[in-house]
Amino acid sequence: MPPTAGETVADFEALLCDGETFRSTPLSEALGARGGVLVSTGFAFSAIAQNWWKQFVRAGWDEFEDVPVLGVSRDGPYAQNEFLNWLDHPEFRFFADVDGEVSESLDLLAERSHMANVSTPWRSAFVVDADREVQYAFVADDWISPLPREEIEAAVADL
Image (tube, rainbow, N blue to C red):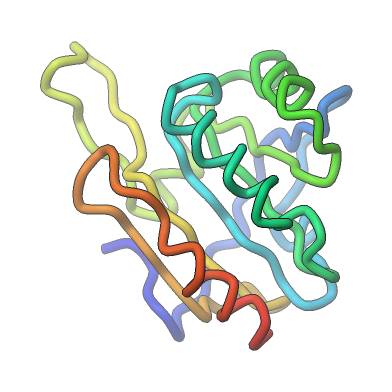
């Protein structure tokens, strides 16, 4: 089961991309003073990722104080950095989850029947505090559902 409110997310470590560079970083070091928002969209340049992240820009998610918004994607660091450059908002960062270990630690991986030997994470968002305790969790039960932005924003405001 993916983490739910009150549970603590594992302090996974993966390559964290900032649009120019990438380095292996534990989740605990990527979080801000108040926590962070983890958003999983599968692959960086997928239509869903492009749609969601542009919505985050329009909604001002790059302006959360001491609460970074961190993407998790199965793409490698070069694709992640290219996506961040396309997005043109350096406040966002992405964990490159090439091997699926981050998604697996969050229990999000699902086999895709129409994609031989490929597993992708369910679209999801977790608002965690600075101690990695989940304050809000959303995991879509299909591949196209939008995020409940207002609920996530309320959870960030409560951190």
